[in-house]
Image (tube, rainbow, N blue to C red; front, side):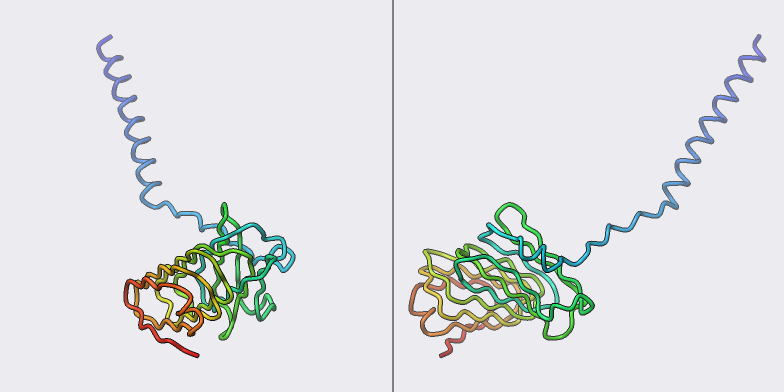
Length: 189
């Protein structure tokens, strides 16, 4: 009896060791699945985006934001072979991402109210025609920001990397500009 118990114990230990070894080797050489590739947002899907009052953007295109009564998101050039722009709405924020776009690519967003813009690694940003109590701009690696024809009473602007902030005289005289970070402020005509 003693010998049979020893044989059973050794067999169980061997099987347990093989399971541990199998799991360990699989984890060591596991290849992660690539993240799902998002398809560029079609013109029809862009036209359906509504009800946002903030924008989060990153990519290799410039962004123009203009106040109008309706909502629209347009990509120029609109040719899908010129790059990938993915736009979605998360709660009340329009999220726009893009890469592999042709030089000079632009996204133009029109909307009635804007309360915040978070821009990361885009070549340029312009905000035009907005009125209201306050607007926040959070920028990281945005070399040029242009503010024209706005009637915002309080701007809160944070630039984490060096960039140029151009504000026209009408926007500058309409309210206060609270600027933090590394932006160079220039008042333009």
